[in-house]
Image (tube, rainbow, N blue to C red; front, top):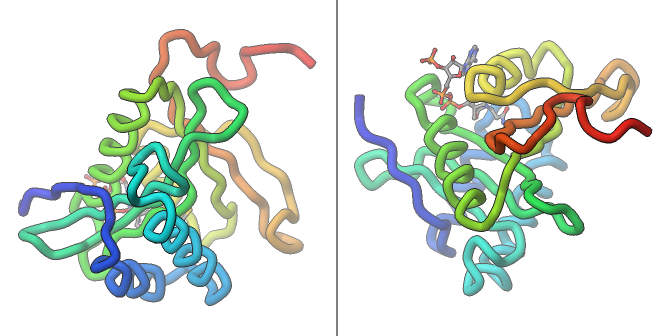
Length: 176
Ligand SMILES: CC(C)(COP(=O)(O)OP(=O)(O)OC[C@H]1O[C@@H](n2cnc3c(N)ncnc32)[C@H](O)[C@@H]1OP(=O)(O)O)[C@@H](O)C(=O)NCCC(=O)NCCS
């Protein structure tokens, strides 16, 4: 299998990131726009600050070709929580370890900065079954749902990847 490497995105990657979003297969036009908007925040203002800037974005490459990307970042007002905002692997090269390599790279960068867990929201619809299977296989656990969130019949599902031994685990923390 061709090795997958990761690096921070540059302005030259923008067209490829736009293509990855467009061809992902499950993002609506509005979602593609928002995905690209936050990449632009990184490229415009955050890129000089790198992972510590706004909406850090990484790309995955195989043999020098961009085949995936992800936008993530430290969640403000938390200690150790990071958020995965967007992730996509080339629709022609799925199940080749691109998504996993991106998540591993994010975990490494977050850990270097005190990150202890990575949180994300995704859809509970059938269309996202493969995506949810990917998260479960990568180390994330489903820790919550809200029915009718994105629309009637379209729940939001919260996944968390915990790598800190200090975490109490799903719903094991403070009682409300
Ligand atoms: C989710 C996504 C990024 C996964 O990327 P990927 O590079 O194909 O995933 P990987 O090859 O790293 O998969 C790692 C493991 O996850 C699991 N997995 C990945 N895709 C899966 C699928 N469609 N069905 C079942 N399991 C899956 C497998 O266990 C896989 O390991 P294996 O192939 O050795 O069995 C990719 O499917 C994608 O871009 N989807 C469209 C965009 C999207 O849904 N983004 C997330 C929005 S919340």
